[in-house]
Structures are given as C-alpha cells and as structure tokens.
Image (cartoon, rainbow, N blue to C red; front, side, top):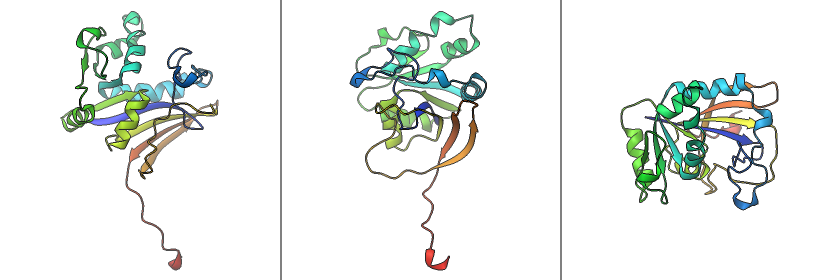
Length: 207
C-alpha cells in the first residue's frame, strides 16, 4: 500500500489543531481552527477528495481518531464524504484506548508495542492508498521511519508562532519531489510531494 499524508500547515510549519478551537490545546495552543478562514472548497476540497477517492484505508493517531469519530458518524446519509469516511477501514495507533472504545464503525487497533512495525506490514501488503490525516505525532514517526510515500501539504499564508509540527527534528536529511502545486485565490499553496532521493551536489568547478 502507498502511504499518503494530508496536512494543513502554516508558513512556520505548524499543523496543530487546524479545524477547531478545542481540537488540540496542548502547550496552551490558542489558535485552534486557524485553517478555516483560508479553506477553499474548490481547490483544497477537490485535492482532499482526490486522495480519498484512491484511499483503501485510513490511519490515525488517538487524538485525531477521537476528533473524527465525534464528527462523521452523525452525518451518515446526509454527506457523501461522511459516508465514505464511515465506510473505510480505519487503523488507530493508541496505547490508551481499547477495542471496546472504538465505536466508530470499521475501526481497528494497531499493536501498541511497535505500531511502526505494524504499519510497515500494512504498507507491504497489496492494496491502494493508506491515508493519514492530521495525527501530527504519528506522522512525525512515519517520516522518521521512511514510510511516507507522498504528502499533500496545504500551505497557508499565516504564521502561528509555534505549535506541533509533523517534521522530525533529528537532523536527518530526507528528500521529496514536488510533483504538483495549485494556488488558491486566498494564497494557499496545495502541494503534492513524493518521496525521492537527495540530488548529487553540483560540480561548481565545471560550471
């Protein structure tokens, strides 16, 4: 399976709580819902829909799963996107929830002991796309482990002054190739990156 990460991200690299005030207040984060003023349904919504159309299963960290589980089941039958979310298989990485807590249909626990190994096994299995939305801590671990094949980053024209980022801070270099970019009228850049190789250093003596 191909692992694709979709994230709203600020100019200073923050992905914490883009959707709502109480989504994630860790670290006294006070800007929950910051992404909403720049959301463009035509461009950004279409980009998310395109990822979802190819998605065979969803992968969540605990907090993002709980946020989604509180939102989508109640919209069943009235929203095609909600119906799609509800129908998909969902894998949850958590050490605090048990199987009985996963009341959102088609949700399954991944082993808490070594979730990265379990996710690697999922990506090695036949299938289409395994999608990650939000889940900043999980996404950082996936990037660190080299399991992310593609990133859809919706880069928004705002500085948040700090907050959770998806990017590892382990001083390791990881290269991605920009394969598509589309701006919105409000200044968001919808960028698709695929995992690639670090290009060779140019030989300036021969230039």
